[in-house]
Image (cartoon, rainbow, N blue to C red):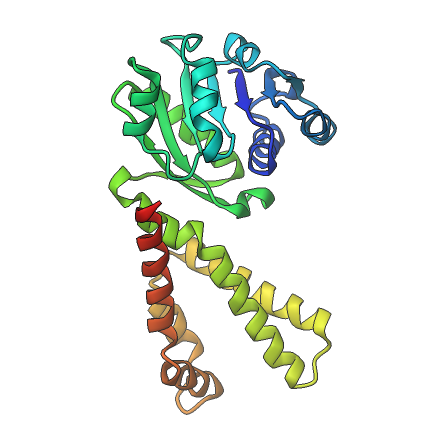
Length: 264
């Protein structure tokens, strides 16, 4: 399998790193194109792949091609490559807000396209990606895309109609989690814990709790109940969170982000 990238930004480099570290592809089997010399050099140093300033070169050498430029550059990028995409190639678009209908119209002919929405934890190999192939993509090709995306986290097929709520949940969600970690740490600092240790304790608590949920498969309410002893410290904290409308605030944050996504 040969994989190409049009655009060598932060997310593209995170994806490359996951692919290489997993052993799915060797660095020499990946090629990336970017018009900015500094981006090409940074990508070459970080991931050891071949780099070029020609998008066409990526299409000539790749089976699966990530479209990884910023959304505002999609029109110009597609105009450059639309006549060079092969019928057997699969394009993987990570452009926020760029729907399959938009992409189909821009290419103006049947092209295999998979729309993907990753999130920033992909940079540390713990991303969550929503995946939606168009009707030209076979089941086998979709499975290959999932295999690629799983090298830097988890990936699941999702109807495109749910991509706005995906944005509100996993796309914007890391910001909410970081705010929660910061709040936990601030409270610990208020109680006398040094700031650096407070962040370590808070972040590891969140990471460990998430891992418990994923690995046990238990309902989060069950896991919460396992910690909340009768008349204990945890239930006192839960009461304070409920008094502050904690769950409602999170609900509203996800909904607001999803609604904003639908307007973009």
